[in-house]
Image (cartoon, rainbow, N blue to C red):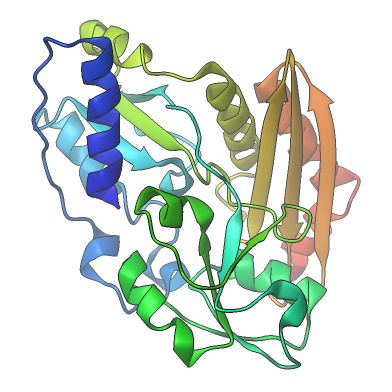
Length: 287
C-alpha cells in the first residue's frame, strides 16, 4: 500500500512537471516490522510514519508520502504537510458479511479500537478479535470470522474486490481522521520542493482533512480514547462531524457543525464534545 501511495504521488508530480525525475526511497517503519502486536499497544498513531519522517529530516529523502490517518496531530519540528492529493473514499467497509445481516454475537476482526468501540455502541453483542498484517493477508483471514473491517480506500487502491463488501455510511461508523487521504510532507526550509509539491494539492481535500486534524489537535495528545472525524467541503463551507467514545462502546459522543474556516471549525467541534457533550468527564473517567 505504501508503495502504491508513493507511486501515485510521483505520477501526479510527473504529470504536473514532465521533466522531473523522482527516485523512490523505501523506509521500513515500526508498524511494518511488528505485524502481531495490537496497534494501541505498539504505540498507536505514528508507528507507520516516524522513521519516514526521520529520513526526510536527515535529507535521505526530499519528501514523504503518508496515509493521512497515520499521522499524529502535529508534524515534527522542521517538517510541514504541504499537499493532500484528491481524497479517495474515506469510509470503512465490512468484508464477508453485511452490517444488517450480522448474526447475534458475530465475530468481527479489526485492529482498530475506533472501529471496535463505535460498532460496539450500535451492537453491544458483537465480539471483536485483533487483526494485523497487510491488506491481502487480512482478506485471506476473512473467512475465519463473521466479518472484517478495513478502509474502503485500501480495497480501491489495490483493485481488490472481495465477494461481499458492505460500505459503512459515516452515520454507522465515522471514519478515522484523514482516512482515505494522502498527506505529503517535506522540510520547511526547502521552498523549491514545497512549490513543486503544492501543485498536486487538492483544495477541497486540504480543507476537509485540515479541519479533521484541527479537531484531533484540539483534543490533545492526552486523549487516548477512540476518536473519529469526517469533514466534507461544500462550496465555501466545511461540514465536520467529530466523535469520541469510551473503549467499551457504552458511550459515544458525536457533534456536527458547519463553518468556513476549517481550523476554527475543528477546534469548535472538539470543544463542544469536551464542554457540552461530556467528553471531559469521559476522559477523566478513563483515567
